[in-house]
Image 1 (cartoon, rainbow, N blue to C red):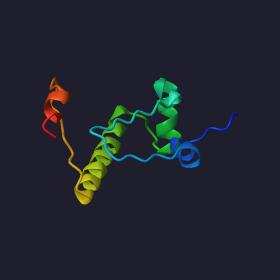
Image 2 (image 1 turned 90 degrees about the horizontal axis):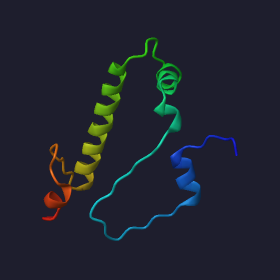
Image 3 (image 1 turned 90 degrees about the vertical axis):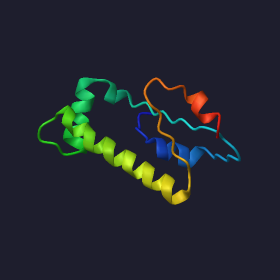
Image 4 (image 1 turned 45 degrees about the horizontal axis):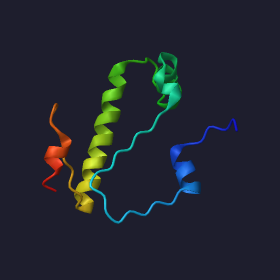
Length: 96
């Protein structure tokens, strides 16, 4: 099994998820190649078409991702709670 498959592909073919009630959802995706300098370099050069690789390239991607999450939550009427550094999440979410 040498084929590299995306998380969406694996989930789409093999996983069905039905949730009736949940108080929090965390999603962590591990991309081994991005855990190394050359992997990050390759991502920005090959996937994003950057001529020069710099950590500055990460900010626009992060901002666009957060903006799309905020837009989705607003459109769907899903509460989006932003936590302050050091704030206990269980304490804040207890009221929900």
